[in-house]
Every structure is written in C-alpha cells, then in structure tokens.
Image 1 (cartoon, rainbow, N blue to C red):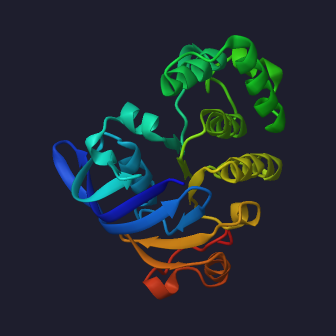
Image 2: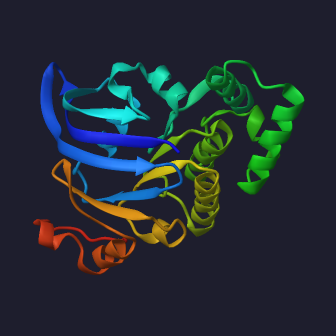
Length: 257
C-alpha cells in the first residue's frame, strides 16, 4: 500500500524570470488502488498540480510538501520521481522523432527496473497489453507519437502505465480528444491498472470518462486549491449544476455548453 501526501502546496509558473502564483495551498492524500478525480474550470490549476508532482521545471514550489511513502518527492529529480513510482500521462504527448515506440518502452522499463527486461518475456508482455488496448501490431515500429492520431497517443500513454506499473499515476486529461470507442478502451486500461494496485489521479473537465472510470473521490479545484471533496455523486451534481456556487459563471460541466 503506497500513499501520496500533499500538504499546503503552493507553486508558481516561471516565465521570463517572472513567477505567477498558480497553486494556493493544496492538501490531498491518496493511496494505492484509489481513483481520485480532480475537476474544475479552465485555468484553475489542475494540470499545474500534476506537473508539480512530476517535477516539471517550468513550475517553482514556493511552500508545502509532497511525499510518496514518506519520501520527499520535491527533493528528487524527475527521473528519481519516476523510479520512486510516479507516472504522468501527458495531456499533449510529445513527438520523439527517430525513436521507435518499441525501443522507447523497453528502455523506459529498463530504467525503472534497473535492468533491461528479457526480450522474449517483454515482447509477450507488450503484445498482450497492446491487444487489450486494440493497438495495431505495427505501432512498435513507428516513431513515438509522430504522425499518430489523438486516440493513438492517449492509448500509448495508457499502455506505458500498464507496462511500467507505477505506484501513482497522474492522468492529465486523458479523455480529451477521444471518441467514444477510444474513451472506452482507454478507460478499461485505467481500471485494469487500478485493480492491480495503481493509485490514479484523474484530471478532467468532463464527466463522461467518469461513467467508465468510477472515482472513489471527486475533488473540485478552483483558484489553485481544492474547494470541495466528495464521492462519485459530486461529479453528477457538477454535471447538473456546474461550478456556479464556487463563483464560476461561464462554461459548463460534461460538455453541455
């Protein structure tokens, strides 16, 4: 059982030597096998939270702490956080020209495990995971994310999570840009990982993915902090009422704009 603890986290985005505060005191505890959905309007700081946990250099932590099983994540480099058990599925996966998906995945697994996985067993493992995500068998020969559709990129993120088996997975708007079939497939992959013991922090604007990935906890994020928490029924309430009671008057929840 692993535990991620965030206490009083403040952070700013640094651009042109100017630091703009984004996070304003985030408190959150999550454990292995739990699904925490973080919802909120655009610009509320949801993606910043994931980036700060993962160690994005664009953000500066100004106060607070983030620990995983008692280890100080903020004192670690990005690769050390990954080895400790943090995984980030990016909202906009990066293209990596010249690097095949097959080499990328095996190198990542080797870096985390301390040695390269044995080829025959690894090929079988990848093949089984790929089939569950309905990914074409030729994907391994293609350069990572180069010329891939949005659905292919997001399924590849889920494939990484299933193969790398982190303790905590930060899923930053994994549902964005997915059609119904791709959403269903990606959601099934998230559920498999959670059943295997992964804790999932699911950042989303919409409730449609929560019909497939039912959260244990829902947190409303606004102005850089969590302003309300509840069970899965809170997402249903937000879909009907939006964020008006938090002072947000534009936009809607669940894509019903």
